[in-house]
Image (cartoon, rainbow, N blue to C red; front, side, top):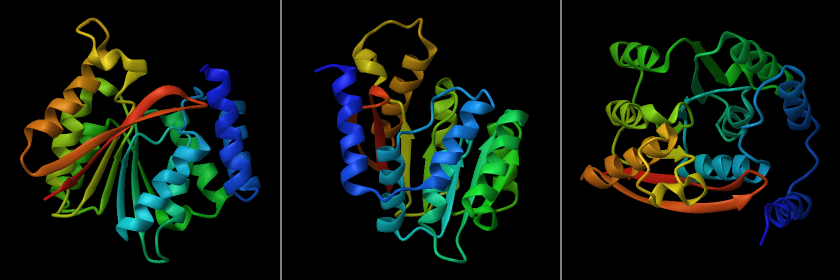
Length: 221
């Protein structure tokens, strides 16, 4: 199998199961036009996040790492009318693009975008007693995965679903090379989830338009 085949199957999934979505297409086009890195989740992955939020019955979602807001929009659409998603972004340019995208997609009333270093924003949320969140999606700088997971636990409740993206790293997660900080961060996510008795987790390997990677998914007990 090749990445070309994986991408073609992703296209088939979208064609077979999804309705045309000009708003989301426009979001991805805006991200490209504004020079954002092409690291958004794929449409199939975005729909998975949306379905997980619906299955969870989430009313409050925390996202760590906004980029251009593509994944944010997928999850925001799964919220009830009075639901909210708090999304944290470091880069001011990314945040401006995301804010415009939320308006473009018609979800700005459900999204709170907080600009600044995520660990500072998380500390502020803790001080504000902003939790508990029903679902937490972690998709930011990978070396900080254990710090983000630690904050996710502080801002959670029994039953909260925590999802951590990019934990397979094309299989490099099973290697012992300590020079790639992203691989070290992926392994740290596994160590955190496996070592915390309050978490019941697994991981799903994925292939598709984004290559070979995967999600770790855990539930707080």
